[in-house]
Length: 210
Image (tube, rainbow, N blue to C red; front, side, top):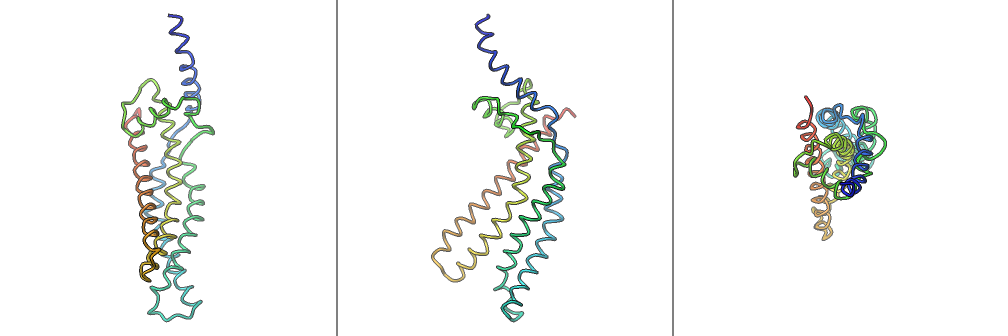
C-alpha cells in the first residue's frame, strides 16, 4: 500500500498546485463583451473607417466620384489599423474586467497527458472529471480570455489580405492564387477561434453549479 501511495504522491502534488492556482479564476461575462463588440462597435467603426479611408484616397489622387470602388483598398487598410487600435482599447476597457484569469497558467504543474485530458474535457471530447472540475473550469476561463482577445484582433488579417487578393485577381496576376489561399487560411483560422470560444462557453455553462 505504501508503494502505491508513493506512486500517487507526485500526481496529487501536481493537482494540488493546479487547484491552488484555480482559486478565484472566473468568467464574469466574456461572451457578452465579445458579442457587444461585434454587434455594436465593430460594424459602426468599420463603416466609418472604410468610408473615411476611401474618401481620403479619392481626394488624395483627385479621383472622380464614380471611381470610388478603386479606392476601397485605402478604406480597408484604415479599417485594419482601426481593428488593431480599437480592438486593443476595447480589450483593456471591456474584456479584461470581464474575467479573473490569475497570473499563471493553471495547468503549468501538470504533465502533458494530464493537460491534454483537461483540454479534451473542455472541448467536449471526454467526460468531465468531477474530482478536478475546478481546475478544468479555471483552465477554460483562461483559454476563453485568450480567445476573446484573438477574436477582437483577427479581422485585421481579413482587411489586409482580402483587398490585396481581390486587386490581384482583377488584374489577372498569377500571385492572386497564393493570396487567395492565404485568405482562405485566415477565414478558417477565424472559424476555429469562434468554435473554440463557443466550446469554452458551453463547457462553463454545462459545469456551472447553478
